[in-house]
Length: 327
Image 1 (cartoon, helix red, strand yellow):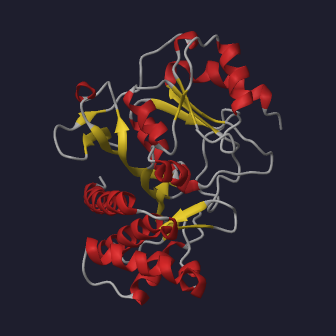
Image 2 (cartoon, helix red, strand yellow):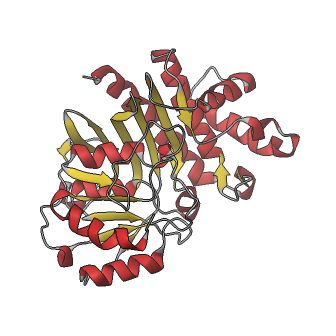
């Protein structure tokens, strides 16, 4: 099931990775801007979104998309240099682009989401700060049907997984459907089945968390690590590459702890990673142990934070984490 959709998604993400890495190699200050919410966005964010949206429109013209970026800023005269750089990057990646088609395809991501029918959700460059630093980022694409993620693809061009391929490959494309979770080096090679770690003791856990303290409460993470008896330093990396690390057994738990009581996670930040970990045998819930509900629009409105881990230790982790986030 979803084999055709998976092949379309894999092809689109591979093309998008090529564009993102090409942009990264020559990115200058003119190729990035700060959005109204103070988060950065780059030529790569817009270019990846345009490429993937065009591929989905060609294969599944009736499928809506929920995506992070909005095309409105590209029409602002103050951003004409960035818009010109975007056009140049897209023309180098593939033919047939016009300024109007770029805006049209990026703008297809405004769907409201919800519980009915099916739609795609995309984070074109998840971990833009990591992308800008030369560290981890992910291209995250998922298909949601009746409010439930059924397919996920994560392109992680800078990720190394020591548990796969002898640790030789840098750059993985991971995917998951009901048939399981798998990873292949972006450069080509064997496809590996992914399984979460067999860890059963919480003091043996390798914890993964966000680099940015604004994305996850590091102070609370330290308290939780102490309560669990962890003796290994946390692995900090940007983006949904953390989900890939947990799915592969490279790490045992990913904690995304709320920094504000009012904040709700965006669905594009978690859909692809969540289906990957679950199909690899893990469990993904919020900090109270509540399943993630992707049927509530563009955010996980009924959830707070995320815990993704090997299933055998998940309940023990929730028991330690939940008291820190009452209500």
